Image (cartoon, rainbow, N blue to C red; front, side, top):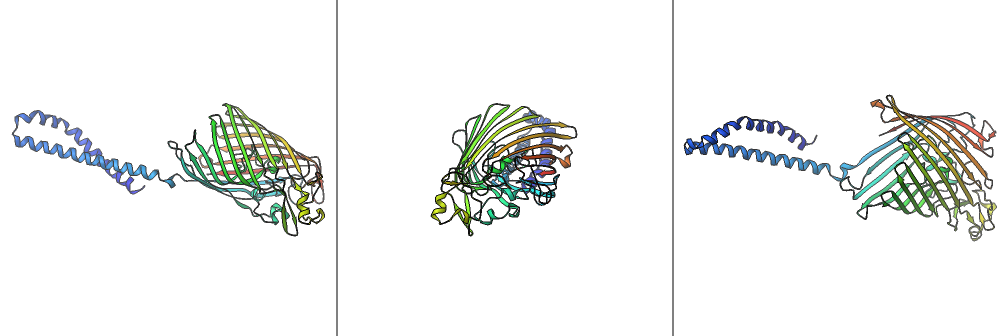
Length: 468
């Protein structure tokens, strides 16, 4: 409680006493008024002065209270009084039934073969551009992420070892978002982000509390990781929201990264129960090769990632999602090697596969994913179940960890996730998730013990999520 609050609190008993006294003495005031004609002028003047004195005190007291309230409102509307501190902490225990001697194959977000780990620790500081009554203004958003998952999604910053070393050895933290947020009075309101932010593509994104699953689908591996640039969001009509951005991508797709990109996303809600989402990133994946510690970049710049989905929620307890993803990595033009006097055999990383007469390692991918989600509130809390099926094709062995360049790989990912959010006050911000996952491929890529590979693997994970 500040000084003004304390002062106001102390004045309230006095104000109540004065008003109560006026209420009790009011009959006497009326009596005095009616008796005024029968008393001497001196007596009448004395009582009138008392009434005026009391009225003056009440007016002064009212003015002081109004001034305190005005100061109180001014203090609560200061810029930094609206800053929010948000956080997410996710820890899990994983068991791989194949018992691999090393790392889980084909996992970007949960590569540890088994045991306990901290998957994600996110601290976010943000301020909205304005308020509900006046939405226009300037805000900001900063998110620092740490944990095992970030080792896959961490952005590339020009370090050669990013490509030559396993992603398990990357630094497990990153500033995932840092941007200024402007909301301008243009039409229905133009929202602008300037700075770095995470990807906006597809149904899943890097935030486990907003997702239904412990793990991310296979198609998420091919998405650009973060963008640094300027992004414009505008509601063309109330049911259609669009986002357009120009930025540099910082990508986790090996070995592609960091070219100027154009991004577009749209969300259309024709009815309250269904929403269509779609978008693309063009020019995102700059193909890189290493030779004697130097990195060489392609000159094609024709990569694209695109998606479209439909989210159908007929009731508050049921949701269905169907999504289609597709993309192309432009590859490396042979002219890049020729101009630098490099032969394909001299390239240390990656292994170059000729995809056309003039291009190496051009990669295509596509896939479909489907989600069924149900949740219901009981007296003990909320219980939810999610079934996910994801099918992906990597035509040139480029987008998935642990594959051989030049071969076509097909993957199927099936998960069943059970979630429980207690109703108890002490655990109101905690969720427990038990997830069973089966992964299958058309080639043997999953470790099963020492020097043994299989076409499938099964895992189970128990995760605890805490948000504030």
